[in-house]
Length: 411
Image 1 (cartoon, rainbow, N blue to C red):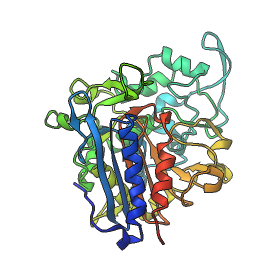
Image 2: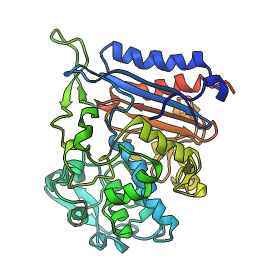
Image 3: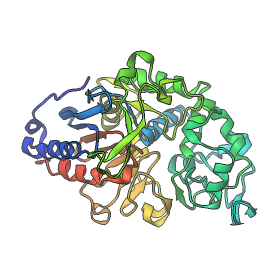
C-alpha cells in the first residue's frame, strides 16, 4: 500500500501548504458533509500526502482505511480508454476506422431529426461513427439520463448501463434500433460511448473486458483491488455509498445511506461490464495507474504503454482547439469553459478561462460519487480524491482541492 515516501520539501512542495489539503477534507468530514475520504498527492514519483479521514461505513462505525475500496464510477473511463489504446499500439485498429467495422450491428444508424419519443423523424448521418468518436464522446450517442427525446427512447428500451442484466455484447443490437442524438463528430455528449470502447476491447482482443484489463493493466501495474466486483474476502473494505440529504432535526449529517457494502451489487459478479462506470478501486491502485501515466507509460520498471501514445491521448482532440463550452450538450464530470478533451481524459487548456488554478496540459476526470484525479505533466504532479457521495456536484471539492494542492508547489 502506498504511504508518504518523502518530505514535501524534497520534491518542491510545502508541508505547510499541504496542511490546507488536510484541513479542507477534514472540514468536510467534521461538518457531516462527507462520511469519509482518502486523499493522495504525489510529485516526481514520491508520495507527499496520503490520508484517510472519517468513516467508510457510518452505520457500522467503521473508520476509513487507506485501502478502502471505492466505487469509482466514471474514473473507469480513463482506464478502459487506455485499455483500448494498448490495442492501437499493436496496429489492430485505426482511430478513423468506422465502429461498424468491428460492431456491424451499428452500420445503419440514423440521426434524430425531429419530433418526440412518441413520434419522430430520422435522417442519414453526415459521416459514420469512428473509434475516435467513442473515445472522445463525439459519437452522437445520447446520455442515459439525457432530458431529450433520444434519452427517453434509451430509457424505454431498457438501457440502464452498469445496472443492466444484459451483457456488453447485447448493447450494439439495442442501439441499432435507436437514433443517434447528433451527427458523429458534431457534438460532445457525455453518454454511453465508453461502454462501446469496452466492447471494442473485447472484440479486438478476443477476451472478456474484465480478463483483458486484468492481463494488460491490473496485473502488470499491481492494481490488486481494481475490478468490476469485490471478492467476498474483501467486502469488509468496501465503503458504504451515500446520497446527499438536507440535514434536519433527525440528523446532523448531510447524507443518507444509498448502498450498503454487504448487500451491494458490487459484491456479486456483473453481467454488464461497464466501461462507463463499472469499476471499483482503491487510492493505492489508482495511484499506480496515475504513476504509470505520469511516468510515460511505465512505473517501477514495468512498461505497459509508450510515452507518445499517452501524450497523444492526453492532448486536446476537439476540432480547431475548441473547448467543451463550444460543443458540449452534457458536461458530465467537468466544467466546460477552458477545458478540452482527449482520448478518454479531460484536458485543461486555459486556467484563466476555466477560472480554476492549474497548469496547461493537466489531464483529469472524476466520478459520480464525488471522486476525482488529475495529473499535471508540467509539474510532475498527481492528486487523487476518493469519497462516496452522490451527486458529484453537491460540493465544489474538486476546485477547492486544486487550489490547496497547486498552492503548495514551491518551484
